[in-house]
Image 1 (cartoon, rainbow, N blue to C red):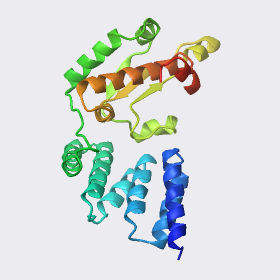
Image 2: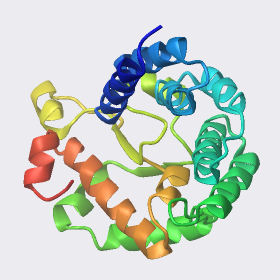
Image 3: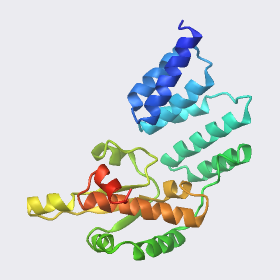
Image 4: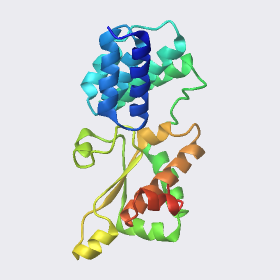
Length: 236
């Protein structure tokens, strides 16, 4: 059995890998911790989180619902929030909102409830944001429409393997520069994921700002900028 110090080291490595988006490495570390200490709450919760981010949704849901209630209510808020996010991926939006409310009750400082909007209200906020975008981005919107969906899906991850269930938006298609070089047109779209954006702020105004940032970022990809270029232009 690994020593307590080795388990702590593995947890540290797993958390660093999780933060860096190195999910396979993170999962390996958390499972190593659990092999040495099957009752390790943090490793079990982080393992479930990692499975979720790897689109292994059914496994993630089994893992998080199998967790025993902890003594610390703040830890249970983490569990409730994670289960809610997993259930959103499965389309269980009612159960998800019940769990988000439970996480907020247990730890209101760290878990504000999502800013829920109906489809009409969200579109109204989106239209206001679109009207205020810089002219080059507004021109791009005329070529590449914005489509709102509740959540990303596993099928999207097949052609965009870098995405997770938590992403706010996604440009799908071919960048403008590649179109010019190819000399042909493509059907392009910018997707916004309403459920995730509703988690990105604590007020409608903050959600609107996250929509603006997400649109700038995704249309930056359409215009042919990489991540560094998007940041240099102030579009990140």
